[in-house]
Image (tube, rainbow, N blue to C red):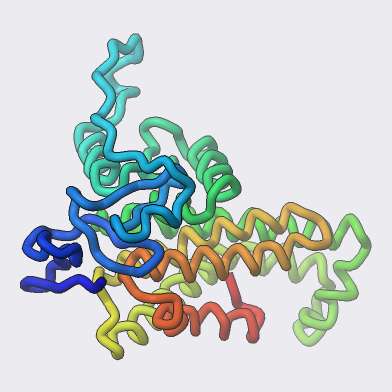
Length: 288
């Protein structure tokens, strides 16, 4: 199946529903489906009626939003109407709530980061599915990506210090500057937020441009940026000694590939175009 478009809007590919606006993409075949024929399986992934058997049955249709509960919370601690509206819209379209990080009124920054990481550990595909693609907000995903990168970089440095490997690995890098490894690391860490922000923006911009050159873009630049920013959650695997960097590299690749597929409705082969910045980043040591 393949979906059509009307004035830039994706339409359902299911026979008989061709005039209906699409609300999700089948992860198996990449076809666009409308609200009537979209099926969310037990693995929290949307599929078309032809491929619902690919998921771990039984399928789960949209559940009605939970009834309002009386809360003893102070009015100022409750989510804003705008946040509740955005969360409700994402839930109706995907069958899932947005990532906890995207609901700061409910979780806060620390719990939001940790809970988002747990979502990724349990089900990477569901994690990507819960990314809100368009919110006219670049700050929230960028702060998430930068925070994960800072935690990952600090973890790497601490493990090098603990194992006595800091001078061997980073000493030659700072030697031309006339400073030792510890001083160089301390100075460079102050630049990490800026460098990571620029890296995420550049990677996402390059990926979006490559997809656009082949007419594969279905959503605005914000969606591509969100893919790269939320794939940076893999940086938290640097907390694992030894194999952490390799685990992080693998998860970042999976999240980026799956995110580009879902954000723009492309195949895995087509998503490889958007993966080029990530792959070049690995080769140059600037990867996620």
